[in-house]
Structure formats: structure tokens, C-alpha cells
Image (cartoon, rainbow, N blue to C red):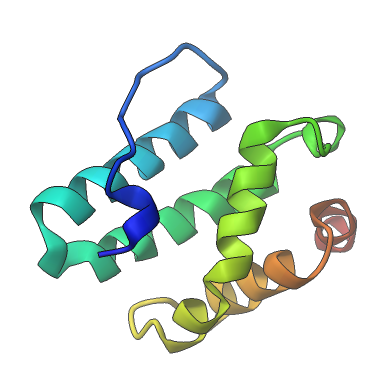
Length: 115
């Protein structure tokens, strides 16, 4: 189990659909790590897919250093590069997109994605 999730608390809060989706994924990751450690890899996979959805849909104006959720998602994705590469359930297209998000600023990725 990842030690940084051992003491996290799941606290629902009102927010945008994007914030709620990431809160859901993070909460599921915490609960899985605590209660079902054998399913932790699947929980990380789910979090990665939610993170990709979040980063593709969050408005560019919200991609700022003062946006705590955005920064946490980016930081966590950057730490998951090895997992993304070795995840046997993740399609190659998703791996590519997540690795690009993890390595480049998301604003740049969204600009490239639109073209």
C-alpha cells in the first residue's frame, strides 16, 4: 500500500463535475488501499483514467499553479510514469496521452490535442 494514502480522509465537498470526479477517484484509491490492498493496482488504473478525463476537460484557464486539485493530479501522474508504462490493462493510446500529460505542461498538451 502506498504510505501517503494510509492516513487520508475521504471528505465529500461541493465542486465542479471535474473536481467531484477526481475526488471520487482519490477517495476510491484511499478506500481500496485501506480495505482491499489486493485491488490497489486496479484502483490506480481507475485514477489514471479519471485523471486523463479531468485534464482533457478542465478549462485551460483553470490550469494554474494556484489550483490545488490540478497541481495534485499533475504531481501524482508524474510519479506514476512507470506504472502507466507497465499497466497491462491500459490501452496504448491512453498510455501515450497520460505520459504526455505527465511530461509536458497540460496547457501545451491541450493545445496539441485540439489540432
